[in-house]
Length: 185
Image (tube, rainbow, N blue to C red; front, side, top):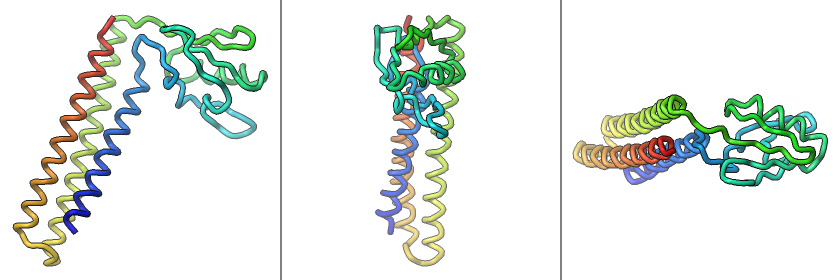
């Protein structure tokens, strides 16, 4: 029972870290990357789909993303979807290709993005701590039901605390990397 609980808790903690990585990838630095548009949704024949399912997304240069739709009528819809997204991007329509230039980040904007990154990190840490609390509660319930001994409970709590510490340290490392990336000019 304890190894299974530990394994489930570790898997959930890993998923929380992966979710944080995904969220951090959305916070843009000065460099362009194709993954930036992954969560932009566009209407395609009545349903909302990600841009990368209706267009080819490429890097034109370090600061410009190129978006070429597979169907010509979709170009306007994709352009509007990118413009309306919360990314602050302004695509330029070149006929068959959308050029999405990445605006240079000001010092003030970098600081704002750093705050956003820290908030995302804190949210991930709270999720990790909630998983620890849930696991410890399951251990307490197991002791009450006499499924495990109190010594086993203490050992398992220590192992879960070590897991928690490891994942919180991983989150801190990710945050430090992202903040350094944001503050580079």
